[in-house]
Image (cartoon, rainbow over all chains, first blue to last red; front, top):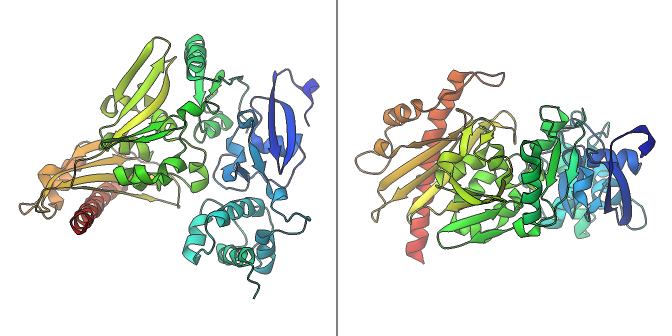
Length: 169
Length: 295
């Protein structure tokens, strides 16, 4: 909904890539990254829960590191490489290892929090190849889930690590 | 809720940033990591007219370690400081404190200097700066000045930063040889603001007897509450007298009731966590000594 006619606010130009695709947006300075992704770019995989940094549902990767998209103004991300849950799949568009692990382990029910978990875990497994259950729990400690419960999500972190390592028991 | 409108400035150098801040005066607010400022703006608890974004000033993204100090630039994210091996080797308390700052995702964006300027009485890094006799470097178009931690935290959410000034770095001083440290806190949920937290630094003499000890407490006053507890060291230098500790801590703290914890409970936590943090810091110092001797 990037409709300058609906606002008298001055627009600021910002350029960044999302999932490898370059974008150039003219947005009000106060546009949160989460809203820029969802409303301006129509990438609605990123979910907005609490909108003040507590729940983790809106987590995206900025230059490979997990960041709350609701706690960043889009204009401050000039030049950044952003990855959303839509970018956590494989090159041919099928499910990435973390998504596959979530299915395997029944790590989602309603799915609202899932995009934040998938992005967070995707980045985490780039740093840690074989996390223990305790490490997995620490890794997801900044993401809230209110229906699945964390046991299955912890299992999915470890399963995703297996899939990434190429082990398919 | 969404933030209210503001005018955005994206300077490309520190000198440009301080010029913009000088022009804006009281209306200007610096945006670094934004992990405290953006939620405050989203909740409309803050509505600055102008934001000066320092995220595109790589000259501020620095962690410099010397034999006696660690200097952290204004754009160094918490996670960078936390994972800097040289900074950890010089001053372990930096990482010990940072591990208690929210969650890794927040630390990826939030900056250590930003947290100091924000001066939240529940924040960990102001306590770390106070314990390490740190200073904050402030720059403006009229020059720069250094403010010691003891004069920097004026009250809840209030630092000595003046309109037109940019905090460019903070310098943490390495404790004397034979020191150990710890940071402990208790929060209702992992990563939440602590109901009470305590950082501790102790120093041992050549015979591993305690010679000096200080703690800094958070969430029990208007800012970090620094307390010298050296007089609570027992005669043998092997531990602390709990009654003396309690008395020393009780004076300067001033906990308040809120929905998360009563003032009495926070006071109780201050006593318990002070004892634990000092014990942990002493163990850390003794371990360091053993490693030195082995090497």
